[in-house]
Image 1: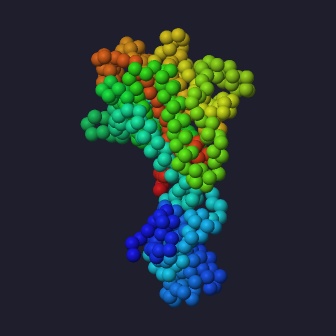
Image 2: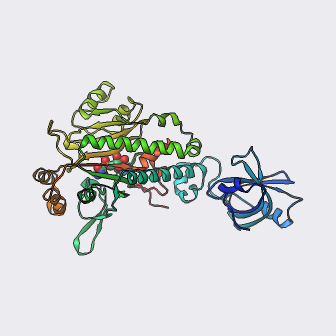
Image 3: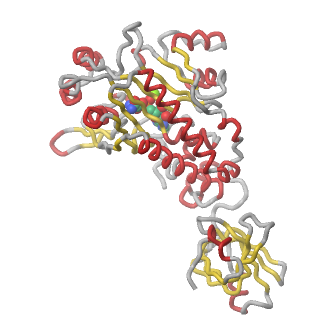
Length: 431
Ligand code: 4AD
Ligand code: MG
């Protein structure tokens, strides 16, 4: 008998089937016993009657514990009261792997205990729901760019130039060439690719030796970074609102069950539709001061400011034209106010903060070189990057969306470390 997946059982009502999976719970009344089985595609209840199964099967049931792996054979029966609409009348049961004292029980555990057992914690309903939302978000991203005519360009993880900030680099010895840095961004490389292919994006892990232990920071996170030739900052913001609305709509459409498991109110996500409100950095500071923040013009928006400001809107908000002093060297100076740059952040509602950072890029050779000098970066490492301004320079813009922050927001979970299978933080490298 071929093995069947639990998600396909409704098509096998009345048939004998074999399932393989892990035990969630068991209970027994002495004559009738129940074992809930999951196989990664769903869960189903198996029912055993002592007088109808062999002594061996009955004894095997008695030895089952949480997360033991088993094979169960039986007849699929309609059962409108059960979650999948079916149950299994078990005829035989074969243990595969025992699971003595599985560490994660249905009772409450502390956070550090759970992260210490992340490899096992992943099997629980809430964690599988988050994993499926993440999977859908990543697929939605790939589909969006595919249908919009973008070309995926895979950028290097070992790099010779600093992408964002000298302060939080991971460095490693690189043969005779000195230090290599783990990429903080693929942006500089997709800028080169945009001059070759027009609309491009990269999608991969990025690394920042962030000392911050906030619920929004990881040392390794995934980022998707589109870059578009001839887009200015305004077109860049329009792309962001279309992109974010599309991802959220897809999660609402395809992850209903998961969002229900996570007790996420879908109505807050249903409001996420373009256009998004826009506010300049300068107006944002005034507004924040009115709300009680002591932020001064020239300061970067801190996490609390982002939360406070985003609370004023019912969907993500785009904050544009920040002071150049708090932003990266590659952002284009704003001709209307050279104290600022043509950039924007996208702030998610409900305290999730910045999910996107983007900008129009400095396309003038001399200004870019001056910025590199000002920030104390080594112009030699950026020779290739400067070449893009020397050979057919072009207006271009792009952004980076952080996957974990986006998934945490869509799922409504408080900390982004649950939005990735094996989070990396300053104090966590295990498992
Ligand atoms: O604002 P950031 O630093 O922008 C860039 O890296 C640009 N090079 C992107 C571009 O224009 N191509 O980071 C972009 C996003 C943030 O908005 C946030 O969502 C996420 O990456 N992010 C982090 N996520 C988790 N942990 C961290 N330490 C993060 N740092 C940034
Ligand atoms: Mg940023």
